[in-house]
Image 1 (tube, one colour):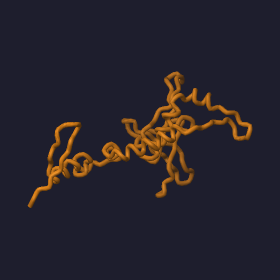
Image 2 (tube, rainbow, N blue to C red; image 1 turned 45 degrees about the vertical axis):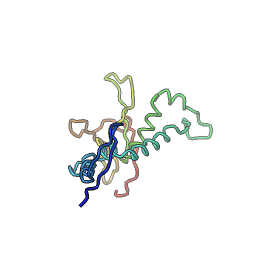
Image 3 (cartoon, helix red, strand yellow; image 1 turned 30 degrees about the vertical axis):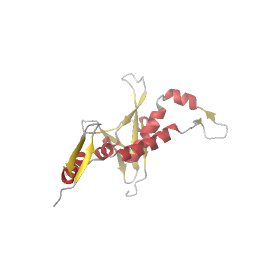
Image 4 (tube, rainbow, N blue to C red; image 1 turned 180 degrees about the vertical axis):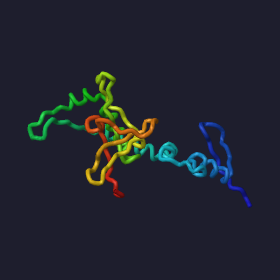
Amino acid sequence: MMNSLIGLQLNGSNIKTLGLGDFDRWLDQQVGVNSGDVTLKSAYDCVAWIYRSIDIRASAISRMPFTIYDGDSDDANDVTDSAMAEIPDLRDMLYMIEAARVIFGACYYHRDTNVFGLNEAWRYWLPTAVRPKIDKDRGLIGFERNAGMGWRFVDDWEKNLAYWWWKNPFG
């Protein structure tokens, strides 16, 4: 039986010849299929077109023109400039919100301050480290976060946590 070969050129080096079996084992190693450790992050990192499609979508959302109004009437004040000054990285936030929603189905930003309550800044929280606390009767009652020290309830989440979710069709 003839062994089928495939040629690869890696980083401009000479062409390397591999048998299809070796090539298949190499691909499995790259994605982690045989080790059982395929994660959302490893798949995202390994599949360039998934990364690029999410990047294109999030970039488009972050560059969309918008206006922020204070009030809900026809004569509401345009506060876009002051909002952009208050959150200087708003465009970056819009990018992360869209990317996280596409990858994880949720996005979380927490308003952090120093110990004196000054130097306020919005900080991205990894969605896999946050979980909502939902009561069957009362609905959403808060959030827990695991920052490496176990799951802890998020204080003042109503004022300091911004969150976006896709609707969950499974409940």
